[in-house]
Length: 258
Image (cartoon, rainbow, N blue to C red; front, side, top):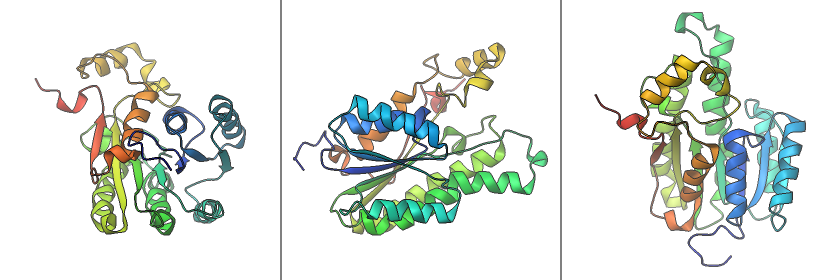
């Protein structure tokens, strides 16, 4: 591996939820910086299409894919067994997979809210724990968790989603302190509305779209590549003294006053 602080050559990155949206943008950004990729998502067809797209655009990179559900513990263990089979441990873990169902608090069934917790929070915790021995093989490795502004303030995405993201942010802080001695940095990003397939529904309402822009100082919706840039920075050797942080990628939303 070369000594360039702004490159990831020779590093292996595992990205969950990598078949579309923010996850796919993160994979492209990491590959452009030199990382080899292990991609995980539930949908096999979409995942294979993403793998082919990445391999075509970054022919010098090794890009592998595994269809798996991070909400299932057997699948989580299979993912890390697959990563271990690569032979040299892991340098980067990006916990990006997520799910939501926007409802009033009293309308969730127990199965619904538990499923959101399993995908958004428990998967990241367990994958991080399972990945710890692989990450600790290297003197400088990192985890980046994709959180949300909903974990920092009220937004209209539902109480359960906000709860999972708030817990994910706190998990980030705790693991950063606990694993610093192992050479593992742990950080998070907190996006506001980003232009993805998942947000296309609510943003298709013109009145709601205008309300979102009114609360966003930069007066626009973010792009997946803008989240990916923040994630990539946190993975770089240049960020070697940054851990336990949660960087908002929100066009100023969290800083909006009267």
